[in-house]
Image (cartoon, rainbow, N blue to C red):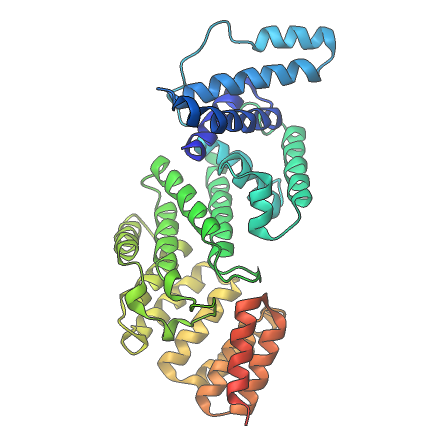
Length: 398
């Protein structure tokens, strides 16, 4: 409940007072107060209003202590509400997301600020999720707020105008997708899947969709997340080992999530020309609908990748996905030929040598396949992926 209200409370404060950085700290204090008080005394009838009142008091107290005495007193008197105000009817979550994902900020700062201000995660929780020191996250958030303050981005607090709305929404969705991807397949560390990050990305994307129900890109992104996350239970074995898609027990896939994601992607495709998220969701739906690798509609998936690459021609991961589909339709030799052309665009990724290894194994070039598996294993920081690739290489050794 607290995470649900956090962005709404922060949005209300920033709209009323400005001072995004100070308001964000005040909201964190109000959330901590609620976490301590509500379990003992019960949740108030209007929890959002309660949080806004407490956060407002914290904010005005902070302003009083930070500013010079004469100016501080004058500012505080001006900012102090003369009488308790009702909680605003407007939900400022989307505006807050636009603020946190301002293109003036680097991607890492956008992610940290979004998870803190909109997701309600603590600095420690964000640090644990991304396996970085807590001080690093705190520094990113602090610098991001300072940059927004210097740019005047938090005042006035309102949604972006039509001229830059699409660009800002694209930034919001990119941040949410980055968070989801890190949750679904962690780039480093001992676990393949960080369920908390994936769930948080889905929760926030649901919130954006509630505010923009007819935006095809938002619907497509939510569908893509649901259809992908639906396979998570079958992706690892009892000891956390990676299980590739073609070997997964598909009875363990989340059928409710697949049904919801499929309905959403159909809705998204009907809402207008498909963008990258809608097309990737359509590909994910075809995988999820198949009962096994042999019944997967690979020609249709290849056709969708061809369309996807017309919308995102510079996306090397989409190109790599097309290589896999091409190999399934025309054979591993065709995939290997296409993979060679892709090498300069993915010089450091472990995924390219991993795909090469699988294709070489299918052609019977077992020694070369083992070498490629080892190359891929050395290039990844994910322990489950490294162990899986090493296991495949060892299995091919004479």
